[in-house]
Length: 205
Figure 1 (cartoon, helix red, strand yellow):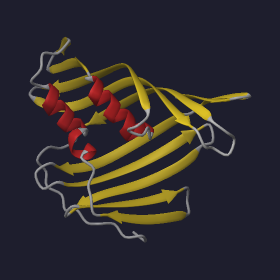
Figure 2 (cartoon, one colour):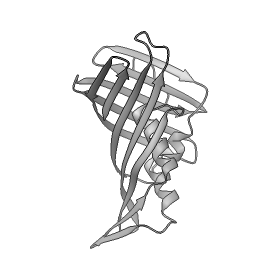
Figure 3 (cartoon, one colour):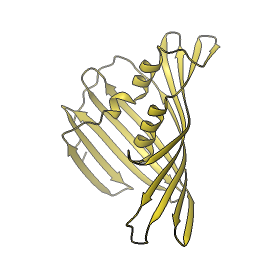
Figure 4 (cartoon, one colour):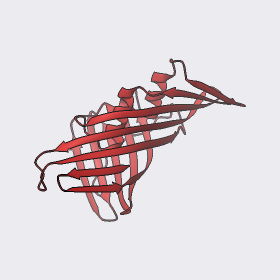
């Protein structure tokens, strides 16, 4: 993403890349989930590891910064994002719509859809730390579902947005922050209908 900060007498431009590796389990019937995420930010090469567990209506978020600092936060609410915008839920929503394009290669079939602007905005809020009250211009979004026979095996998501925030009372005076961002996600479905025990994390484990 390209980040531009505009101030009365100064303009700053920075290019930031976020590489996120997620591995998780989601139970849409019991409303339980475990999602392990490692995020590497470049160019400063900062690594953040999070373990998000949802169990009995609570969200447990364990964070590990670098190789040392660990924190565990527990909240009594669960964001609906995780149920609505995981790869399987997105696929279930779009599968009943007519795709823009169908690509067949032997037993493999790809269905390609244009993402609704509401979905692109939600993904930007979820993955790019853009707040809901930020002005967002949607440049485009694509959803690609890959099936092997009748089984969903891969979900790809692509989107592009421009976000603008105005900060009136910063220490440096009023500023405008513009983020021109592109997001790419690729998810492999490794198992379906395989039950896993979900346990809340502790700070030490």
